[in-house]
Image 1 (cartoon, rainbow, N blue to C red):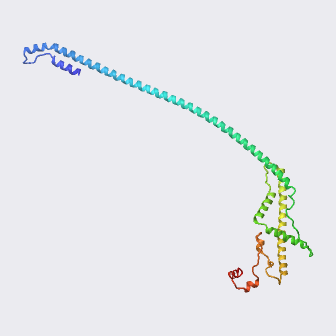
Image 2 (image 1 turned 90 degrees about the horizontal axis):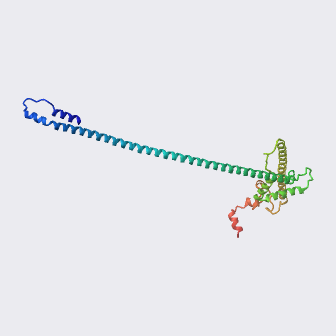
Length: 302
């Protein structure tokens, strides 16, 4: 803008006279020189004012920029301060949490040791009670360990044997057969509880283990002997029952049929405790009487 003003001023104040101009025109040009100076001064003033405004605008922008930078720095400093405070607070909380966890771990470890000690104490007391109970059972079983809990009457090999042996076997067999299944199971459990002892070898050395093995071997030998005696007794009882049944059949010939069982009951040998078989009809009636069971029931129910 200042350059344009200067150009205009130079154009206006250029010396020389064109051809055809009057002297009056030159006088008027000389009179306009003060106006040109005034216009030049005003242009310079305008230029200075424009420069001053631009400088003020630059200063104002610079101040605003500095203010924005200052505010930004303050915000960054506040954020950094808050971040440091947060980190310090987290560090303190983490230290407190680690301290609390360490105390909790110590308490759990102490509780675990106490529980372990309590379990060991209970285990020692239990082992002591078992040891005392085992010693007591051994003392109670020492008298009967080598004694059988039954009596086997062996039949004499001579021809003139005593018939009381046969009757004794038959009586004992009938007593065993008359027992219920629950009674037999109860006797079995009682005998097993009496004979089977708990085996504890944790605290035994080599010599004690050898002695314990010999003791168990002797018990097994005695049990096998008693088992053989029981099997022989059972065979003897079966033979005696068959023999007595044959004698009864021979004695009851010609008498009332069905009074005495004339044949051996195989089911009684297979299943103990069942009632004896009762004959409902004679062989004569089975072969000649053609009436049905319903007809017989109707006739006898009248």
